[in-house]
Length: 251
Image (cartoon, rainbow, N blue to C red; front, side):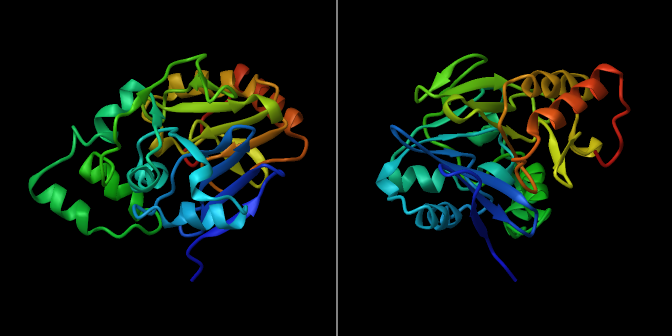
């Protein structure tokens, strides 16, 4: 069984993917150092170090962690990386309660959550049952729409999947890191699954907005990035959204 896959998306963007749930986190080599977009579903942070090795980057080159949202398949490794590298984690205020474990369930639900393995879709249930990431991030840095992080990453508020979901636009290479604001299926843009989209109306608006950016590479939170005919595929989905396109059960 393959535990983690690491591959180059562009010369400076690398994807860390867990095949068991097709979850993608990213490493971006910028002029100021390496920036993480999400931190993997392994709470030990091991996936991140595999990624750094693959892209020939030293751990001390890491500057920050940009968190799209609190779900364990994207944020579980953040605290471990912070402990070892002493870097800030950026997020939206609406996801802070889960990221800092203020909402963590106690009693039987909390104990069951701790026992669930970090594998496949179970990692999502682990977080949803426990209502928090496995370990609280340290000193969350709150960002909001239009803000810049590390000079190059524009913050885009994209609620719908979670109230505090964020996407990030890397201006130098026109890369959109969409998290779970949208899905990529068969190398095309799709809606996220209806079951994991609590607020469909806000998610629809969020998806349309982030797709209007000038995008050369689209990096989603699951499956695989899109690197070909990106503008055509984004425009096609925008047209579908504007036409009131149905949001199917499976995205």
